[in-house]
Image (cartoon, rainbow, N blue to C red; front, side):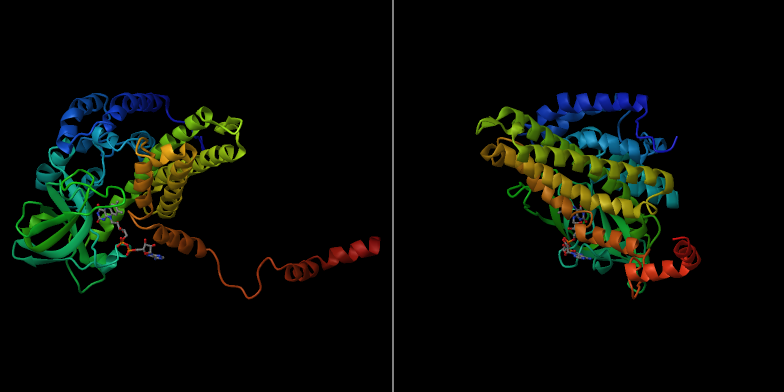
Length: 433
Ligand SMILES: Cc1cc2nc3c(=O)[nH]c(=O)nc-3n(C[C@H](O)[C@H](O)[C@H](O)COP(=O)(O)OP(=O)(O)OC[C@H]3O[C@@H](n4cnc5c(N)ncnc54)[C@H](O)[C@@H]3O)c2cc1C
């Protein structure tokens, strides 16, 4: 039946397992000060349990070792995993590896290049290789990738890459980078850009630094989740490292970013829910000015508003996922753009209220809220800033309107038209009276 908001009982069981598993096994690890290598060691048995449950790398089709979940199921799953930065790694679908695996899969589908599958995709899925996506440049606007300057020039059986990138997430821990470069400057960038695999060990790849950010101001070099600045100077890689067809960079990016945005939004809902739970728990616990905070109307408003906003974001995101499953990423473009800026705002606002209700404790590092807040700020920037997504939505919406000298709802004009149209009727009414 149409408009059914329920989840299949068999999948609901899996979701229940994930909720319990993430809460009991993953949350406690967050509080330990482990290096990335130690984390990898500690989570290995957890990853085996995820595999045994049939939930590993669920974003990919079964032929590629995944579960072939559609976007709605993946969305529901990410809502749970998004509560903890570690959970996606435990489930084999953390960014940017998951999106990069999807990219490679699409490219391989296009070209049938089985060597690429064996050399890059399969090890990525197995977790034996790590990847990063290198598109944004410090000296051109990332919000408009048609301006990209990084070039890749064909020289015999090789590509020679030159350029300057930054915010390549996980670049300093990756084994290989997927670089977006201009391969033909004589045509429009939509047809002249390509994605190329560059092993980090290739001569000419210089990981200049991990950029300190608002999220991690004092991050050590080479930590998982860092954002690398990278110089590419005469970097030579084999021609077969091209993903998909030459010139298909933008088409591939769109395929990668559509599902990625849905997953981000659902992960943000997981974060929002965690902050919301803290907001509610503190409200019923803290006593001041003659009552608990839960009895103050302002706090009740925060709880009610947060609940409604999270529900709205959730339904919008699941609807975008549902449309994508049925009609594809291109058809769901506007819905995906809407959830990107709406979801980011909900995340930010709910965490902000949770901090406020905790007072100085909320501002302190004794709760995860301050870090969640700093991390949430980036949601309005990465995968395209809010303003660009708003522009996409507004442009699409405005296609349904044409200019008019007199507004179509102008009452005197409508009245004159109605009087003309119903002249006979009005006449008979006057005679009868
Ligand atoms: C945490 C994080 C992780 C990231 N990870 C990666 C990664 O792994 N790989 C990668 O390649 N990149 C990554 N990025 C980069 C990200 O994709 C870019 O920051 C983003 O696309 C914006 O590009 P920019 O920073 O160059 O900002 P600019 O393009 O310079 O835009 C600056 C501001 O201009 C405004 N603006 C832009 N366009 C418009 C418009 N049309 N109308 C109105 N205002 C506008 C917006 O307010 C925008 O924030 C990451 C960024 C962050 C913060």
